[in-house]
Image 1 (cartoon, rainbow, N blue to C red):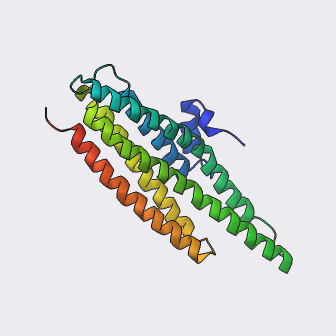
Image 2: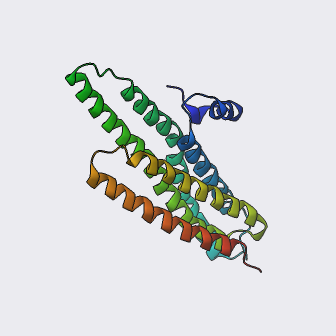
Length: 209
């Protein structure tokens, strides 16, 4: 399968703009999250902190060490989301002429839909963790880079919301009601926590000197 995460940017944008089923919104959400984390890492690595104190530098360094793995986890989700949706389409195309084929098709669709729900949930988890780290960046980062911080936060917020929308759509395809309820509850919790952290980070980044 094509690796969208390794494409040159113009090629990836063309792929997103194509009329092919993948890559789609879920891949775009993971991409937005990756870019958002990258901007936060940039601010954390600047030589000057908010006031120049050693404590700020230490906090930023620790935050950066936690953010980098999140970016590394979000990037492959660009491909994972496309693969998950492709599997759903393949399952739906399975023959259903006999009872056995119908049963096999239903089982395949159920498995594929579960994976297609788990991938955006992973995106949400990583984005929420990154937004928590963004508060540290916003409080300690260079004021001249406040727009980098806030744009990074907004990209993560958009990725969080977008992944949540994908989950909403896919939950209806899950046959396990208990699993669907657990995923829905976690989705709501991640969205609530992420929105709270995003607001705090933006307020801190834009706080007057």
